[in-house]
Image 1 (cartoon, rainbow, N blue to C red):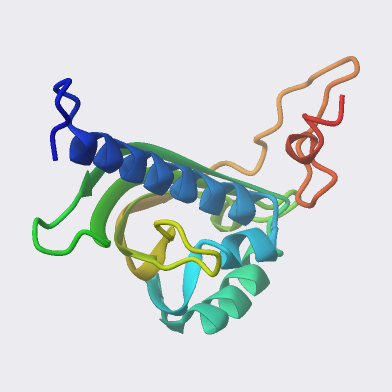
Image 2: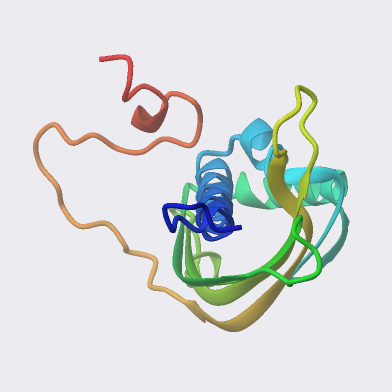
Length: 183
């Protein structure tokens, strides 16, 4: 729909939808790296499915599986790069997103095979479903497939000597990201 002043309202709504989806994907990565189960859970619809490496199942099963695995590591970092979001013409509340990423997993004191980096793609079907209080609804993951492109083991000694008072990330809600607006 184009207004009299030439503004394409539908195009602006699609930009807002894509921005909401990109924000959702970033929140997912934050939740995974900070071990914030509630945040990760909020990125999925209740009936969502996930096929993630050797795992395939419901979102609740995925959360149990992934957090058991993630808690073995001292640190993880998930980086998302190229993300393509596509909307089918005939389904305004459905989107497909392909996100290229790299994930680093570190286990201090572990063997080399316990420290690994992986290149992957999140291939997501996202749906916007009605919100409880009206409005356009929230975009969330309805189905995810993780396509692993490569994995490598990294040397055990990943630490560089850092002196002085350095803020370190922590894997819980004590991390600085949860308190940046407190100041």
